[in-house]
Image (cartoon, rainbow, N blue to C red; front, side, top):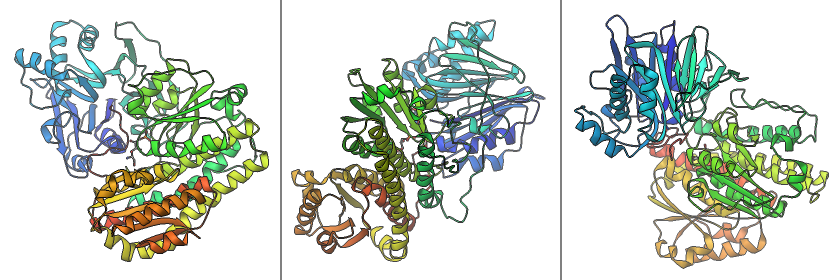
Amino acid sequence: MCGIVAYTGKSLCRNLVLGGLARLEYRGYDSAGFVCIDQKHGQFSFDKEAGGSSPIERLTDKIHFDGTAGMAHTRWATHGMVDIKNAHPHFNCNKTIAVVHNGIIEGHEALREQILARGHQVVSTTDSELAAHLFNDEVEQHKDLKSAVIAFVSQIRGAFAFVFLLVEHPGTLIVIRHRSSIVIGIGNDEAFVASDFIAFADRTNRVVFMPDDTFAFVHHDTVEIYDFLGRPIPYSIQTLDQSYVEIDKGVFEHFMLKEIYEQKRAINRTIGFCKMLGNQSSEVFPHGNDQWAAPLDFNDSIWRQLGLSVEQVVGLRHINLVSAGTSWHAASIAQFFFEMICKIPTRVFLASEFRYMPFFPEQDSVYIVVSQSGETADTLEALRLINSHNVPTIAITNVASSSIVREAGGFLPMQAGPEISVASTKVFSTQLATLYWLANRIALERGLITTEEMYNAEEQLCVAAEVLESTIEMYKFRIIQDLAPKYMHYSHFIFLGRHISYPFALEASLKLKEISYIFAQCYPAGELKHGPIALIDEHTPVVIFSVLDDLLYRKLLSNAYEVKARNGHLVVFAFEGQDELISMADTAFVIPPVTPLLGPLAMTGLMQFFIYHITRQLGMPIDKPRNLAKSVTVE
Ligand code: M6R
């Protein structure tokens, strides 16, 4: 994680760099720092801020110095506490070299000892500072910067994107990339380097995505890129058809609330977009926000877009989904879509586990990687592993310019629009909509459903989106006035689901934990009796998410009875007509019925709204929960 922005050019860089850094806040917000070269005095000017909810804002307010070459960093702590000394930039001992770093240096303990043994003063407990001292020694030992970088890189293991600035080379940004993405922006007599192009998208849309295992010397008018052996790498400048649009909260108190309310429109947009892609309709639906939407050729067929031939789709025998966090919950719900609609055995993998498990490449299979950001390191590394076996891969992400999109064989963009709140809401529901649509589209291609049924599936998605929003309105005042003030006082929750509602319960439990910091544990409801039932008491609400399947509903009912028999406090999310479950609950949310596989989607808005308001009552920083980052780019 961490966000990097750097500039070299003819303009003063403070506003450009710090403005860009603010847009990278989603990558972490533990601390922030800025450095630029004070050419008059031949030294660096720098400052840092750490802790609190907005270090970037505080930093921006206090910095008044400026220069024509500079860089900034927002940190998500990995090695070392959240404090000023650990905030980037870091420096060599005599402060002639500054570095900002994204990633993790492996074996940093041994490196630290070597560096200390050579007499360096290491002031932080980070792995990143070691790079400044190590590079210092290489610069001293080599007559040219290129040899110094090659020698430096040969000693570093892990994943990294570094940008170095040297007082002696004031117009040059030295950029090094290994398994951590970084992009160069080519402007008019100026150049940028950033973790994400949105940092400079208001200034230029001409970019160079640095290939992995390369380093670059970036000047205001030229860029040289080399591999780690020092051989020049030819590169091309891409013009991105995307621009940055400033997003604000509008009338909402938090981005999370705004994004909860954006879901119905996002799902409708997704369906419209998928319809166009699937060549079933000539209706034109609004595109997602330009910054995030993909530049697509609508004449292209859906399968070509996904990197598959029609024969491959018809012959599919295995579907695999790989993802993390909320995206993994969406994928786990989608397993039911693919197995029940397409009749194709489907497996769902946590990306962080997948990489370290044996891999069995199968004929006639496809791997779908699902990620909001398209930058999650676990998911990206899993994708790279799959790609190395030449198995077809499809990315489903919300960010068209992301690494995962660039590296996957095919791409199906979500139409959620930018999601700013760290807790994922509208991306989750849009993922469900996209995956449900895709499952139906595959079934159509395989002759398992008719075109009529395909249209019906799209219609059902619209119905579920409607229910998602209307149920919020139904319960709005009760939640705000009675329920949130009541449930904020509980310190533990148990969440239960069964079948398709189990991964949904996992998502609810993650949502509660990540924004309210209330402890929540989720179980498949049938497992209650195998141990967790010991936890039931009147102080621990048990939240049950029902399903639209008669047999499974009866099973959930038994679980609810088990809770009540032990004096447990029961909260249910049930569907209209499930009166027995509703009547035994201490609190019941009743949702109009939808097509059974879309039950979780229909419940999504209400679940998120309830948890949002519990957290609001607690006064937590909802959009930026402690310790989290929107984009998790370290393993
Ligand atoms: O960008 P991704 O979807 O790959 O991110 C995966 C998780 O880091 C993410 O879903 C995380 O769990 C969110 N904080 C959930 O709200």
